[in-house]
Length: 162
Image 1: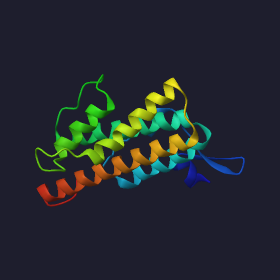
Image 2 (image 1 turned 180 degrees about the vertical axis):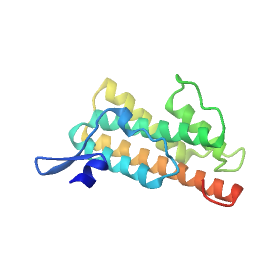
Image 3 (image 1 turned 120 degrees about the vertical axis):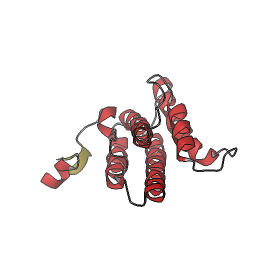
Image 4 (image 1 turned 30 degrees about the vertical axis):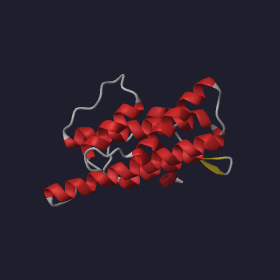
């Protein structure tokens, strides 16, 4: 039980539930720690069933916090506080140089577009648990991918992990 609590879960009515539901409780400041990112994804996925809106907000926070953390670790300026999620993700993808110059990486960018669009839907017309699980899956996939790309880049540039 204590292990679950230390991982951010509560055992309530025979089911594990995320302890925190505020979007900020899914922020990541240690993007090079893949287990930490995976943990946030699992917590969000569980939250999606009970509170789809909170899960989508948390998914957006996960992506934004990973991107801003990676930009900080690389030493690049992050977009301003009013920048939208897509701009923050674009800056991160460009900085990580995941594709050759002049080629647009639509696949990765679309994961972020999906999370951002579902976030907008959440406000205007509501969302279901399946929408939330889609957003969470896209956010966790994107966050994990760019974090791994950062670690590979750091290893390649500096000879050992960050």
